[in-house]
Length: 192
Image (cartoon, rainbow, N blue to C red):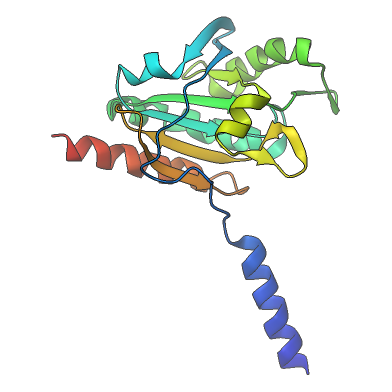
């Protein structure tokens, strides 16, 4: 009986630890969108089609600024930002969730200002982050559970032709950096 319980616990743990898969599949065309964002405390508008003119785009959706996992993920992307740039990629963090302030969620109107603070502190001005709409979250199929206005933790690598070359969903933050960087480097190698 103990062996059965241990085996059942192992299977349950493995199922929980296994990453989910983003619904937008490799080869699909990435939906166009634009979003207001922040880079180094300065507001700008990100438009996917404009970014793709410069090369591949790495977009990582995260649930909310100033939460533990999102802070860890953003800092890890900042640590590798120069490698993404060297591979010719535009890197951007995207969230539909509100930011945290003093342990509470801030209003949508305060969210962009909080993203500015988050950008300066955790992106360390190395790449931008932006607040996306619920429509963008739905278009990319990154809705967090039963919260249609929040994004889950999904990363996409989009080739300059607008095709998705990587879609990776996992609530564990750190796997996203290596997976997306590998995909961008493979893209660069394939075109040289």
